[in-house]
Image 1 (cartoon, protein in one colour):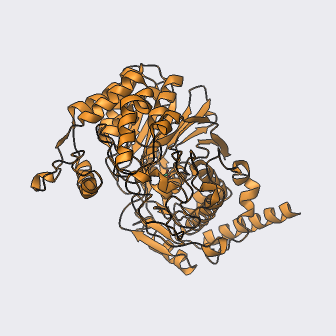
Image 2 (tube, rainbow, N blue to C red; image 1 turned 120 degrees about the vertical axis):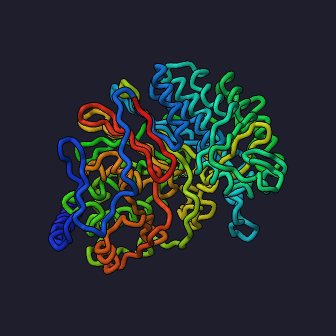
Length: 597
Ligand code: GLY
């Protein structure tokens, strides 16, 4: 009986949607003619793309990452006969050198891998809480959060996972030697590389913190003498001699070059110096985990994505399945009804995230139930076309601000069709801003991704509960969503982005832009994005993501909209086109670059 009622409700919803559709302004269409997608804009107030960048094509391999130097490293590895995993490992280490704001060896991440025979894997190399961590470690004696302690400085770091993750991935799937895939990063660190304008801006932005947190150290500082020479400029060369030595130890000893011996000693000493709690024992005990990826169908596609400890995969499948019954293409890209159901889906998904998601090694996460179509149908019960759902009726919370959305993603496909999707992070830009003395790398501030106190938002405004409470050796919940899609059993898309809490919604919209709205991969990346995360109860959007008439439509129904002055997403993706060639798409919003051959 219950089931028939929910099915009936769904029918009413869909029917109501079709009726709404008839009253809409002309739709924004992306159409295909003679194999080239043409954007046809029938509404002059809609400007759906951040830029007109076109994708990079290749038949033999593709790498898309946040930095041109790192993408070039990946391409060189592919050309040297490496497979997608070899290239991905080389890119992870190269990003640790050329993209220190998010690329890392002092952080962690997630890999989704699909081999060319269609077998899928996922590797969780997320950081862990140190053994001495406690549930209330960021609270004062009366239970209030001590501001900033989980974000900045030595106590903010989890035990890093990236080096172990790369060693695991390479041991299982690599073809070239470990020494070969490490060498490009060592060369970049030892010989230096020319900063882009964005690189220079980033380093200049954090120099105050670098001085305060690492007094007397010159890491990532052009000079520690307070004169004009402190300022980095585009084209300046950044040489990282200590980091080169750390990478050489990793090259020579594998994971032991980081988790034991000299590097571990330097890291533990750094912790003692700054009253952090990571010990050499914590480092020795760190191990990444192979997990079964989430695999879920959406229409004729199979979505392969990251299971918990990331919330990203669950959320992505929920988001996609929430809107699967609706005719989004007919309604039009980001138009009234499309925008409304997508926002309402986002609201419901983030409410579930806060309640149910955490480290699966510590709490039971009901993944199958959360992504089941029956459950998702039932979640539409309180939806109304006439009025926005009130997030506080779903669950209470606090309105926070938005801060740094750093993290980084890269996608790789090799000539044989093996595909890697990796998202990796220090959490905030340049992590905790602690640089390990003598070892030359930034430490993460991933402890802030725990729920430091139930109901209190983290730096992304995300709230959580017991499922994501701090415990020794537990992994903190993530939003990272490295994802691979199959169509008709064949590799179709490799996708992902940084963006903190906005990761899932950017991945979701990018995928739908291709499969529902017919965009090329690059157009889907260029397309403007929006985001709702349940709390705060508002939709943030890139200027131009909604037409004026859609803004009116949403406002008239009680939606709170906030136009961003900055941007959403830094997508790096690869699409397999019908002729088997690859389209690499990198985000024009930053230095992201695709390289293929
Ligand atoms: N640190 C961002 C995330 O893992 O979601």
